[in-house]
Amino acid sequence: MNHTTDPQWVIKADNLTKRFGDFIAVESLNLYVPKGHIYGFLGPNGCGKSTTIRMLTGLLTPSEGNINVMGLAIPKQAEALRHKIGYMTQKFSLYDDLTVKENLQFIGRIYGIDAQECKKRIDQLQSTYKLNQYQHQLAGTLSGGQRQRLALACACLNQPKLLFLDEPTSAVDPQNRRDFWEQLFDLSEQGTSILVTTHYMDEAERCHKIAIMEKGTIKADDTPKTLMDNINAHVVEITTTDLRQLKQALSTLAEIQSAAQLGHRLRVLVSKHINDPICWVMHQCQLHHRPLQQQDIRLVTANLEDVFVSHTGQNPNLHKQEG
Image 1 (cartoon, rainbow, N blue to C red):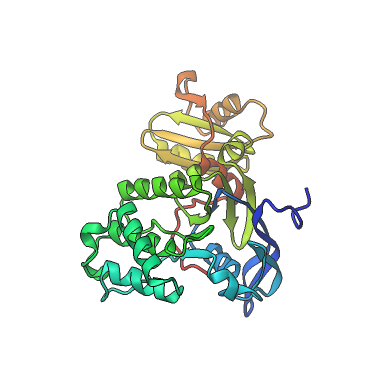
Image 2 (image 1 turned 30 degrees about the horizontal axis):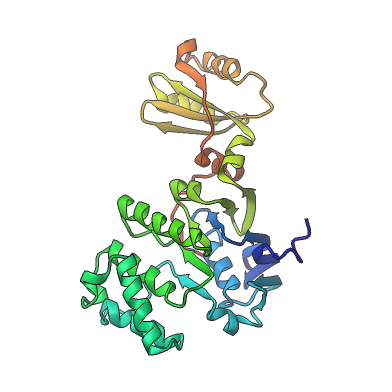
């Protein structure tokens, strides 16, 4: 497929690299986001997700590579792009000393939206995102979920066809995260393309497609189901006693990609080249004087966290400073 000329892509980035001195934040990244999709960047904080978004929106100039967003060459045409996209940053970036409605009115003036049209859109967005009862409340006094809804409303005020969301749910509880994703699916259904960064597994599974990032590079790129179906490892679960000691013993073996305890179970990723992972793991446990019964061990289906670990060798829910 010729990515460079196919009109279905809302974002096309080729060989994207960003250096800060000797530090390479993003390296030779190729990204193709289909129109109308919710496309996720999955990776730990510090892997380059935010840096990539800043380059795609024209806020940062790449050290190398070419970017085309909605038919515009970036960063050269970044000013024209600004009126076509919405951007919700990692941290709440609106004005705490303005009310909900005043924040929306201010954003409307920035975009140069006609006053009558702006009022109509604000009324609609306050209704859509359940902000009517808070419209005269200072933004600084809102809860995390309310601030999140206000930030999304502001990002949608110019009716963008493309939304950039940079870890938008990092400061809210699970119910608010769930509600937020329902709102994203409503936008997607209406034809809005969405690029969202996250380090939450449940959010990544909701995306139409995801890219797994680590240390500035994309390790895998496909639908969540395809990535889980084609994981390059056997996933084995063990239920026995002394799981901490067993984990320590298995983790020393080269054929074990990962071992993680989940309650009373040990979830182990075994290299794909092991033909019979059940027998092999039982044998290894026997060698380490921790014999297993057949009922103690089973093959299970991979989840997205298994996929991430198999590609990167680390837990995605790590918190480091974003590069």
